[in-house]
Image (cartoon, rainbow, N blue to C red; front, side, top):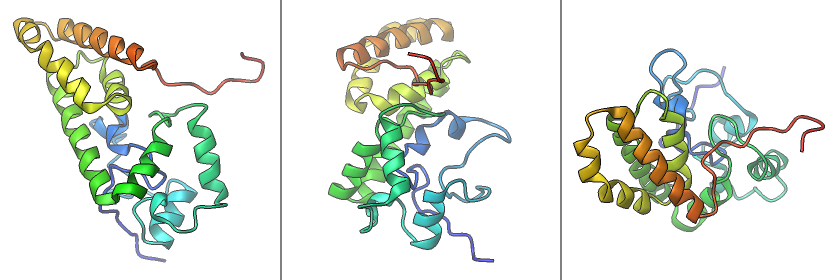
Length: 196
């Protein structure tokens, strides 16, 4: 049996997903995902992960010189335009471009800044029902603008003793920011046959 390869940057999926911004990455207990091919991950979760990490010793498919004509990667990019799973697939093409342009180390540094910001939100403003929303907001919206919204509201937030009130205020502010960006902060579900 081949030795299991561990990624250096598990918060970036082999496929380009934002694994460090997934609700399952921020879950306590047995269902927690440690990240893509991270220490402690189970079996090879997908063909792209096995091909990219195990066979080619890469962090992300975006680093591979043979992506033209890669059918699994083409399917993933098509998927990114249609629907999501635990996390949004919308950023996958842009993530690949960042890795192409700036390299995996800079992409991981940017991802770590988002993960750190998300951790802060979850520690101080999670009412028990907002984790998925915060994960999606941090994944889809510009980090600087999210930070600006939190800073703008900091005095009001600190005066609120109830975490539920803080979550309501932040959800409203992030939703308004999303509308200005032409986004909806909801995961897109797969449509069943006959649904429009």
